Amino acid sequence: MDAAHAVGRLDLRLDTEVRRIDAQAVELDRAGDFIRLPNDAVIICAGGVLPTEFLRSTGVALEVRHGR
Image 1 (cartoon, rainbow, N blue to C red):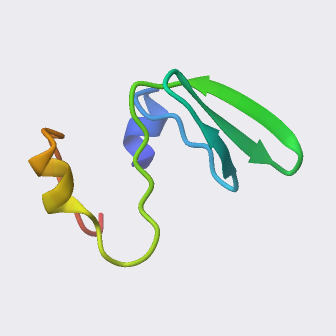
Image 2 (image 1 turned 90 degrees about the horizontal axis):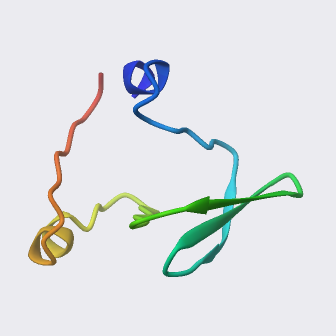
């Protein structure tokens, strides 16, 4: 993750809260500063069990990695 972020392949938005998701964008709140970003898809994983099989069944390609 750090390597992808360092070369600009991953945009990290830590300490944010998702406020709204619509067909074209996602809105984040970071300490009262609202950020609207265009998106093709949003995946939120909350908790300990990833929805891997569900996502694959909908055609989403996944690569699951653990640790560094």
